[in-house]
Amino acid sequence: MTEMVRLDRLAKHFGPVHAVEEVSFAVARGEVLGFLGPNGAGKSTTMRMVTGFIPPSSGTASVMGFDVVRAPIEVKRRVGYLPEGAPLYGDMTALAFLRFVAEMRGLHGEERTRRIDAAIARTQLEEVAHRPIETLSKGFKRRVGLAQAIMHDPPVLVLDEPTDGLDPNQKHGVRQLIAEMAGDKAIIISTHILEEVDAICTRAVVIARGRVVADARPDELKRRSRHHNAVRLTVNANLQPKLQPLLAGLGQVRAVEVVGAVNGVASLLVVPDTGAEVVHEVGELIRRHGFAVDEVVVEQGRLDDVFRDLTRLPH
Figure 1: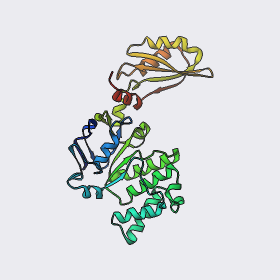
Figure 2: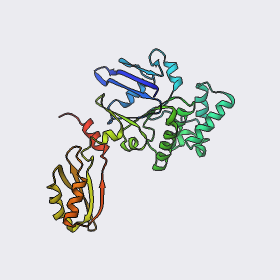
Figure 3: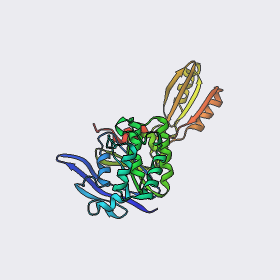
Figure 4: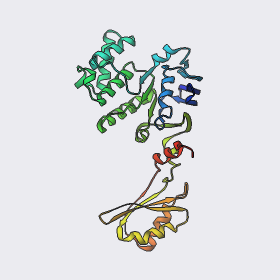
């Protein structure tokens, strides 16, 4: 795959505050990279350096071979950027704002009209195109910001919290749009919403305290979860007192947790030792004792477990 974005030991210091410390990774065409971290981890600062809006204190960042410090205009031509908060001109209508951005991008005449119409359609802004931006909901403002980012069809997209403020239907639409664009672009999505990674990202970089602490595919991260290969059973609640200790006695089982008991039905979670597969042993125990089980599900793992472990403050 063609490399589109590269960060090499990128750092940013604001006086004594080290917001970003030697962050390195690359993004290729066709990748959707989830850039994850808790609030204050350095995500937005990194995105601002990648897009050339603030200079790094040290290290380098490049977009399609152009250094963000030495060739900032060439970088900006190739990047669509949705910043945190998406600052907009509130007294402009959405359409007027997009026309203004198109002019700044060097789009004119029929080409400008075509690109604006396409951006409005793709972000579903038709019903608010002629309304002042200051009168729009947070979700619609976010979509105006996204429309300006994609309007010039850039090969690299940097989206900082793209679904912030959107309702579930709007989130689905934006994620679908990102998936449609992903084939011929490199897309970086800065987020702290883990479901975003599961939904659309092909890879995830996790940052904490200004440093990269993980770089892997979402499924690889899930394998680090204590719930990877955990077995969830749904049974009659009357069986729980007998079944739970038997399950806990199996080899390679770390714990058996009651995760729910409602209306006479109990859910038990059999947590294995790291990486162990215990579903066959669980199934054999159930058959041997003749327990009636309503449901058996093997979990892939949970990103929230891994995220907490990776970003937890040291004691």
